Amino acid sequence: RTGHAHIGSYYSRFVPSESAECSCGHHIQTREHILQDCPLYDRYRHILGEDEEDRAMEELLGTREGVARLAEFIEISGAFEK
Image (cartoon, rainbow, N blue to C red; front, side, top):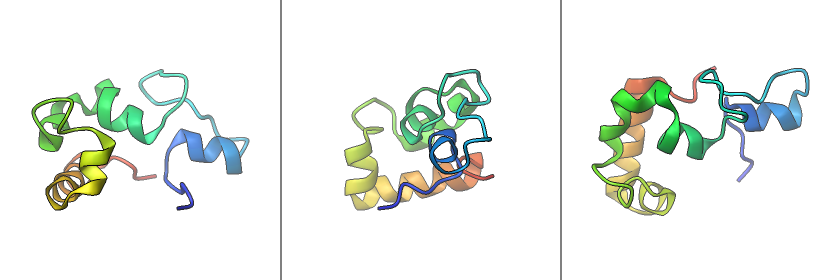
């Protein structure tokens, strides 16, 4: 896995002139930050699941249901778009 994504943690490694900071002001924008903590996506987070266990990366990437919820979250929220 390359880690390629339209997020600050990627850009800080490969495009040093780009800020790694999230638009919400968090010091670095990561996949985990967007999916679990970023206030910009609070209104969409219910799509990922009702509790932290449902929203764990292992659940979202390791189960068919989790991948389906993750795809819906990305499509509806626009997360990870440049």
